[in-house]
Length: 317
Image (cartoon, rainbow, N blue to C red; front, side, top):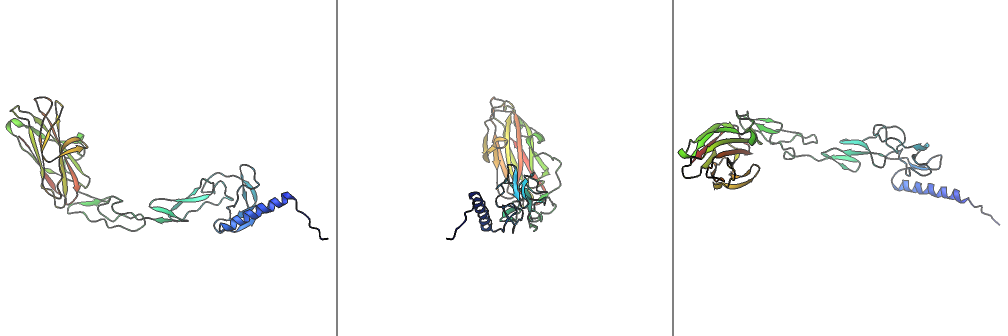
């Protein structure tokens, strides 16, 4: 009678584990290899040092390599990662940077504007708007120059912005740096203040001005009219004015323009398209019978055209 010998149970378990690792490696697209210790590791095609099961049969703080159990390493993409075998540096595709993954293996990440697609980095081109460029030919981030337009006469393209020679009032981009245009008194309806030496230096320019106003106690509160015109061709400037009562309690009325509530507080604004004239008028009202105070004016660039000065006229009645 033919007699079949039985393998010890422990040996059978080793065979089953090895075969299971072998099947797992093949299913993942790699080439499974059994090392001298009976352990399976993935021999390719992507990375011959990446085991299928990094821990089978190894003590804590060790992982499997073709040569057997190996001490875990320090994560360092320049010399391999924690569960790697050997000291070869991690690699990355074009547009990517080699890293060690949370799992202790070589990996990579893509720097903007590149995004990861599978095992590579694909570039997403940026636009002139993305780059906040109004002129010039900046790179789209993927090696192709953009056409963001030209600047008007007298201006130059600097870092994607059309820039004119600064006017004598710069920098006056905040209320604290506002230019004093003079003083006025409503008792004699004047004087009318006219300025023609200031310009919009670039597409992001803000110009602040102020006028000290005295209430001449002539039976009425100061009414202040501000007119902005003479803008260079292609430009679009907007106008906002505020009144700051010396005594406080400002409750002015916009008799020309629209009520404004935003940066700088409550005021009056005029926002017309293109080079249209912008006008606001404020009928002042303070907390006492003395309506003296300060008129603050802001000229903001909404659309940049050619270099040239605008005209600002302030009347008191």
